[in-house]
Structures are given as C-alpha cells and as structure tokens.
Length: 212
Image (cartoon, rainbow, N blue to C red):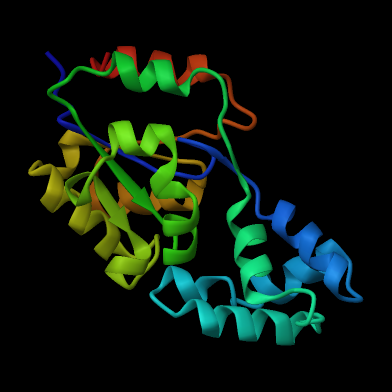
C-alpha cells in the first residue's frame, strides 16, 4: 500500500502544455516590438504576475499594452483576453496516468494562475473538470494571493489533502519549486515537463510510489 495520500500537480506542462510565447507572438503583431521584447516587457517586467496574485484584468491589460506600446484600438480588451487564454494544449499520455491513479489518492492542482486564464480556459478543460472539479482539489495563486514558491501555496494544499508533507508528492516542471517544497516541507517531489520528458518517467515514478 502506498504511503502517498495525495499528489500535488502543477498545471502548465504537467496537466496541459502551456506556452506564453504563443500570446507574446500575437501581441507583437499589435506593436513595434519582437515577441522576445514583448516577453521581456510583460514577463520579465513582472506585469504577468499581476493577475496571478489577484490583480484585476483591467490593470493587467492597461500595464501590458502601455509597456509594449500596443495599438489599443486593435488590441482591444476582448482581443487581448482571447489571445492570453489561447496558450494551452493537451499532450499524449497524461490522461491515462490520471485515470490509473488509485482512487483513494487525492489529486490537487497547485497552480500559479489567474482569474483570466482560469475563467477563460483552464476551468473548462476536460482534465480539469474531471480530475480537479472543485475547490477541494484546487489551490490557485490568484485566490491564495501568493505564487509558488511561496510556502502558503503548499500549506493550503496540505490542508486540503489532510495529510503530512511526507505523504504528498509534488510534481512541477520548474526545479526551483520542487526543491523549495522539498526543502521547506521535506516532502517528495519530482521535476517533470510534459513538453520534453517521456510520460514513462511519470508513470515509473507513480508505480514506484504505489500511486498506480
């Protein structure tokens, strides 16, 4: 019998592939910057984190379009929102892994995300609706008010899981977040990126941990 009672899943590149550069390439069509420069202004300029920490869409839109010098007549709020939400793709194998998990092991989504992405796309995706259907299975940064690697994200996940850190496996595509969870809480973690890693790596880890 597995000692693991819960698995904490990141969203981007774990449950679905996520690529913000898709949006930055589209935004570049409405300004004089390259996609890489748009990335620098919005992501590296930390404007991107505004909605992830509970900020409004209006603030995010205004600061983003100002930073990149976008033509707001063409890049309207509605167009901006649509582009920003159209960055998620399914990938082969993850659905089967989720289906194979022992039913007594709780699945919890622990995601740096925002209300824009959540309402505009994520909450409607089939794997989210089926495996992370309600707030008992979701820890979302825009509701917590902090983003990983802030420990409040994992504290809430552990409360919802009702288990000890050593009983909760955390999976993320960013090594920093996995190492932070391991360092602060002492729980098991795995770095996995569905864009580059074989799904068999995840399957083998789940078999080893007795999760499937």
